[in-house]
Image: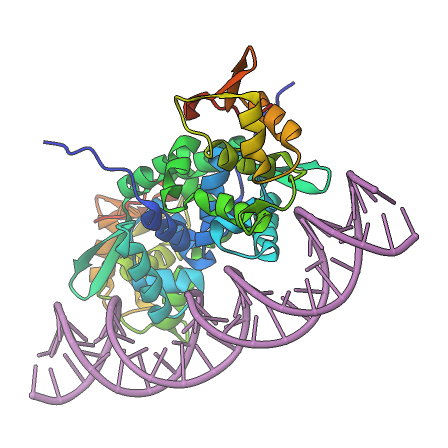
Length: 198
Length: 198
DNA sequence: CGTTAAATTAGATAGATATCGAATTAACAC
DNA sequence: GTGTTAATTCGATATCTATCTAATTTAACG
């Protein structure tokens, strides 16, 4: 009965990097990858005092990176290479790295842009940067109802509630495939069809 | 013309772990694994100020973990997943980890033991711990010349220069295969034959 | 040119942590 | 038991670094 190890979460991975992000601890891991050692030995090898080594070993032990085997009074430590490999797999693919950032809400950026370009319900100006313009256009297209067709005049009218240059904005909405036009009739497209580039 | 990437040395690997051993930077890597972003965007996503993000990106850039693409005034960053994979391989095998500790001189421990058990050229006592006894025996056997045979009496005499209990020490030298005996004649074995356990 | 926007650099500060010595615990030897 | 040795825990300190604000660069735009 072998259980499939679940991929480490963000804080576990962070803890892992912190554990190895220290000269003494990285050396410890290196030494213990070769052979098991007592605390006393390790202290001599690293030119450190026993308490310091004990402190470092405790951190490594939290992550199961090392295992301890007591023998009488002396404690022998050795590397738990399985744990090392397991954590290592998490870094292997950038997909897995990308999956770590679910705690980061992507909307924060959008909200910040909207807040800085909207004032009293109107669009202060059209952002020059493509990236920001995209945020504004996504907001703008949501002012239209889906499943409804608008004559060009209605489109202009609605846009002009927010900004006088309805021609530019209307053209951009088409360019990013947020709206579509046929014979002077416009309608909003479903979000999956929107494009990132015009 | 592709060059084989040389395995990272100790300090590079340490730098790598330090780079990722920070919540903000680890999130940065996670985000940039998904898509390229400007500094401004990243600052908004992480609820940090631009200078802070710049600082973090600089650290990641030192290791080539991220790449920058300037576009006018704004700098777009993205993950360099090749560098990530390359560094990742170093952790993959504990052999490679073990090879990192060449800066750690293994003799330090031995010297410390010798220093604490030798006084005025004589052995104060025989260490109880197997590990330390081994160090002493290695030192003791080097007092014999290689390629020369010693009658038991000569062996005892030589050992007694250092410690009265020649019987025990002689037996141990045989046990660890540092010396060998045949018909009352002793000789030193070459170092590769020595054993770690008696 | 001056202005503006984005990024970086510099300097200051607060929070984290590596290291040590002292005290404590655990295990063994006598 | 007492004494001894290895390890850990505790408390203090000194170093490192993440973050901020302010100042400086860089590039685009009128």
